[in-house]
Length: 133
Image (cartoon, rainbow, N blue to C red):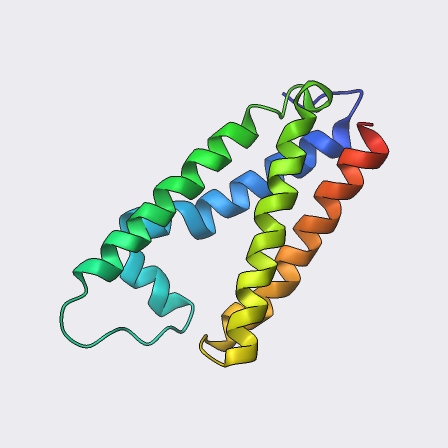
């Protein structure tokens, strides 16, 4: 499973996909309001149907991206586009979280999460352009 020629790239994909599937994708897909409580979000008053719907949609998209990225684990060199995808997703998530922090519309956990997205972004680009070029 881990590519002996590119072990760091393979391990990056294993660790990042495992982390994000367990912490983000599956909880959002199956228990979005519980996930929101874990991260300190205030839940809306009244009907939460739309909130649950959007949470599950985001969980489904996240799970789909994670499964696609996991296909690159055995041969990251042949799937270097996946590192571009990871960098793009994490770069956009940095923007979303910084925007929320500036507007003070998110709990502290989401602002702290910016650091996670920055690390993923930097690693994805570093692996893509230095190891797999």
